[in-house]
Image (cartoon, rainbow, N blue to C red):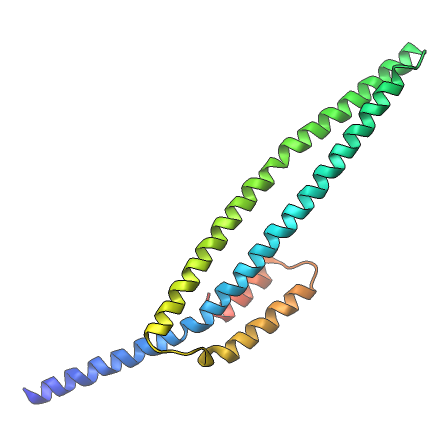
Length: 174
């Protein structure tokens, strides 16, 4: 009976060591979540800035068109006047349609924010698990540096493909 108990205890200790190794690998995943979250936040910010610039441009163009419509009214030639007026009204219609389409940016931004919040929550839970198992940050410093280098490399590229992002995430177990 003692021998069975001793074998069972050895098996349990072996399982605990394996779980500890598995949990240590969470450290690199935690850093990956943080980096992915930073990129999502940057995408949200850049998207909002671009949208604001587009909105400003649309408002300025609409104002210019409305001023042109007032000038068209002063033209004596009815045929030219009607043609210009029709074209300018179509342009205002297209700009209004474009404004409506920009509303989707806000929806996308909200979705990205929800994803970002989820990633932050997962990152916090991983950190809690790492602390619970007494695994310090020093075990993941090398992986953290590798991930940082890869992300800096991506930041220098203007066009980042989904494959680039997927490759980096795979390298760090995500």
